[in-house]
Structures are given as C-alpha cells and as structure tokens.
Length: 561
Ligand code: ATP
Ligand code: MG
Image (tube, rainbow, N blue to C red; front, side):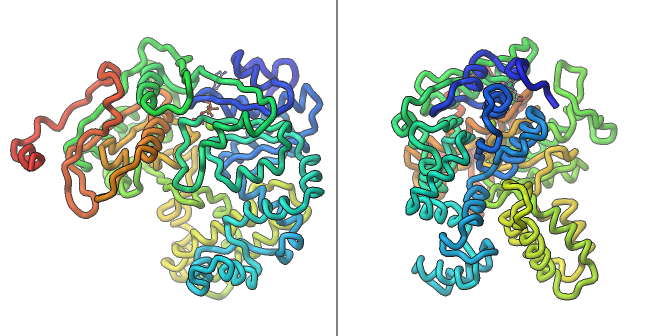
C-alpha cells in the first residue's frame, strides 16, 4: 500500500495537485492524453478520504468500460488500502443495474430480472417489428431488460421520484466521471439526477478524444459543463508524461486543424534527446505492411528464436522490448487478418481485441470455471454455458455481495452471449471449448500481462498505453474511414481525426505509422493515398523507413484514369 497522508499528493505535479486537492463543488478537469487523468482522479478520491474525512462510501466513480473500472479499483486499493472497497466504482451499466436491483418493483421489474442476450433481443425484435413498446413488453414477459435500458430505466425511475433522488444524492455525495467527453444523453441525464447543480461532481476528459458519437455520445455535454453546474472550477493539465517528445509533437500537430480545446497545450515531460523520431513506412500492399510490422517487432524484441522475456522500457539501444510492450492499432477489424497472419507465421504470439459493444468480458473466466466444475452434466455445450451463466448471475446478485463486485450478472450474461456461438461450434467437446477459451482464438479477452503483441481497433485502444505502437492503414478512405458513394461530412472527418489522435497518443517510446499503396477493400484491390491527416504534420518529425519504390508507370496511368 502506498503511503497515505501528507505524501499522498507528492507523486503529482503542481497542476495535478491543484485538481486532486480542489475543494468540493463542480470540478471539470480538461486534460489531454497522457497527462495523468486516472492518476489525478484516484489521488483526488484518496486525498478526500484520507485528508478531508470524506467517507469512502459517499464516493461514486464512474467509467465507461469494465476494464477501466477494474483499473480504477486496483489503483484505489493501492492508495487507500481496504477502505477503498467502500468506494463505489461502476460503469454506467453496472451503476444502472445496481439502482434497478434496489428498486426493481418501482421500475416495473420482477426481482431477479436478467439482461436479454443477443438471441433474446433478436427474437423479441422479430416478433415486435418496429413497435418499441411491444418489444419491451415481450422482454418483460421473460423478466428481461435490454442493455440500453440499464441506464434508461433508472433515469425514468428517478425522474418520477424526487424523494429517491434525494436519497441517492445523500448516499453518493462525491461523484467522479472519467472520459466525460463520451457521455450520451441518457447517461448525462442520470448524472444530472444524481448530482445537484452545485454538487461535488468531478468530470474528467478530453474533447479531442471524443470518438463515440456514432453510438450517441455527445461532446457538447462536456463543453457546457460550466453552464450546467454552478460555479464550476476548471483545471487544465498540460504535461504529457506518457510519450517521448517527438510523439507528443506529432500528435499535437495532427489534432490542431480540428481541436475542440481552445488554447490546447500538451507539453512533453519526457525530453530524452535520444528519443526516436516517428517511423513512417510506405508499404506497397497490405501484406507488405504486415511484413514491415513483423520485421520491426522481430528487430525490437531481438529475434524470435532468442527473444528476451524481460519486459523493459526502450531506453537507448541496449534495453529490451517484449511482445507485450507492442500494440498494433487499426481502424477496422478487417485489417487485423493480414497482421495476425504475418506475425503468427513468424512465431510471434498475438492477442486480438476487437471493438464491439460488449468488449470487456470478465464473466468468461467464471463461466469456464463453472463449466469445469460441473463437467459431466448432460445437455449441449451451449445449454451448459447458459446454465452456468444462470447460476453465476444468481450468485452475483446475492444481497451479501459488495455493491460493485468484480463480476456482475450483466457481465455474466454478456459473456454467455459471446460464448454461445463458440460453444455451438465446439459441439459437445468441452476440452476443445476450454482450450479455445484459453488461447483466446475466438474470444477477445485481452490480458495486459500476456506475453503477446496486442491487436486493437482504435476505439478499443482508448485510455491504454504501450511502449511500442504501430498505427497501420493510415490511408484516405480507411482513416478517415469512408464507404463508397458516401462522402464524409465535416463532423465525421473531425471525429476520424480525433481517432487518429487517440491512436498516435497511445505510444510511449516508439511510434510507427504506415500506409499501403494498394489494398483490397470492398472486394477489389484499390490504389490508396496516404491519409490527408499526415499533411498537418512536419515531415521533419518522421523518419522514413523504406519505401515500396516508385510506382510503376502503369499504376500511375490507371490512377489518372
Ligand atoms: P488518456 O487521455 O490517454 O486516457 P490520461 O490522461 O488518463 O491519458 P494516464 O493514463 O493517467 O493519462 O497517465 C499517463 C501516464 O503518465 C501513466 O503511465 C502515468 O503513470 C504517467 N504519469 C501521470 N502523471 C505523472 C506524474 N506526475 N509523474 C510521473 N508519471 C506520471
Ligand atoms: Mg485515461
């Protein structure tokens, strides 16, 4: 456990300290990537509890993904020790679920309600057609709620019950929200109900990393924080501790044309004069690009056959890089195949995480354990997965349990949903199923400690950091992503640029940006241009790492036609 007390804020810089020790009332922390937002957020909670006698049980910290919530929880444990358990750490979904569990009847639900899985949702949708209410009714008949309803129903409940609102406001007097730039209308409404306009609401985020508008997130909630909450205090963090200076400079120039933060500053704290420039590779094809990644990983790790498993930072030439230090980021899942192929063939271990709605799946391990435990039960494997899910969901709903257990019934049902197709494919072969789970072949459970190169979509990479990052497919049409016959709007283009920014800023020590001259998209091989986003960046920040050579005249003519 870290030392609690006067030393608590010593590990923060001056601005982080101002943010962490600010008095109560609305507080907005606007901070760029790598400026230590999570660090500041956890230290603020720890400081309030340890120094200002705030009760941990009065604190509610909200993040967007289960993984981020787990990380928050771990860091709080480290700072506060056992009392950290009294802080409620939740995702919007798990928060909504716990409110609904406490007030199921008032929300029109029967006790022990479950979360509808994909199949159940699809079935209800087919039956109900366009009629949303009919759809909900069908789910209710099975005592189920839709995932979206986990936030909608508590909002409806609280809107009609001012007394209940007061009870929750009394319970959670201090609220902290990370990645506030990505809240959507319903989540925003929930926060407004839970926090009075002059409440102790601390929102942290970076408008330039708002990348979820396709899912209903709206950065304007962030922008109007000071209007929504009375006398809001604003703190800006500007020092980037994550990335080497050339990476910070590249990112700052990349976002400049569409930054949403007036007077944005991002100053590198790391000023190593030996820091490598950003590597830029012009590949001939997607296969060539994948081979570039393979070659470079091989070089960095020191050759697969005699690789070092020491995980160390790249600090000058002598130190080592391990596979787990490396991430390959891309815009669309379809790009992963070529990379997986090239790396796997060279014997480089990979783990892939795709971005989809239920991307964090902590329930999977519990289900696998339950299956092993109940080996010998009859029924198809898919049915057994479902049964295991039911058992676990009930267990995790037990009122003895912590308000924010590591695994919630929601997680379990999400895991059941993901595992069902895999179970069906494995027939009745439990060992095969378990081994597939263990190797992660079909399920994207990302283990940050696994000794493997991590493959991620840009959306899934948010908030993470890696010593070595490859940002592949930096081509017009791919990043920014465009579909045939559908020109991008200015807003879409700006969001794609923010996505590019998020990608660049995941890198700590080395960043490689690549694009291919030809790539198969929508079934045909096409000529590609480097992304227009590169135009905003000084060529001097890049080191060109080889070229596919001059294009053949034939290609050029084809392009002119
Ligand atoms: P993102 O916007 O990408 O989510 P962030 O602002 O949340 O980034 P963190 O992930 O909290 O940034 O911090 C980035 C890195 O900088 C972490 O490795 C963290 O430990 C380190 N860091 C943050 N503040 C300090 C500090 N004051 N001294 C040293 N290292 C720091
Ligand atoms: Mg963060």
